[in-house]
Image (cartoon, one colour):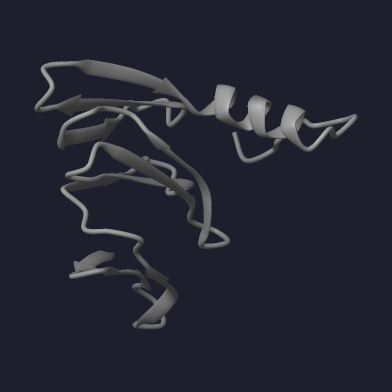
Length: 118
C-alpha cells in the first residue's frame, strides 16, 4: 500500500502494517505511480521535475527537470522499464529507466555495471 501525505510518502507493508520506508519529499507532488513489479516509484511535480525512487532501498535514484510546466500525469508501462509523463506544457515524454541506470553507471565509472534491478 502506498500513501501520499503532504510532503511525506509512506511505503507500507501489508503484512507488518508498518512503513517499510518514510520518504521525505523534496517538493509537493502532482502525480505518482509505482511499476507493476514494485521496483520503482516515480513522481511528477508542479515545477516539471520527475523523482525516481528504488522502492527496495527507499533511495532517490534520480531527479531531473522533465517539463517546463506542471506534470499532470505519470504512468509506468507494464514492462516496468519505461514511464510516460504528460504536462501542462502540451508535451508527452517517454522515459527509459535502463538508460538512467546506464548513464548512472557511466557517471561513477563502474567497469561491470549490469544492474540486476531491471
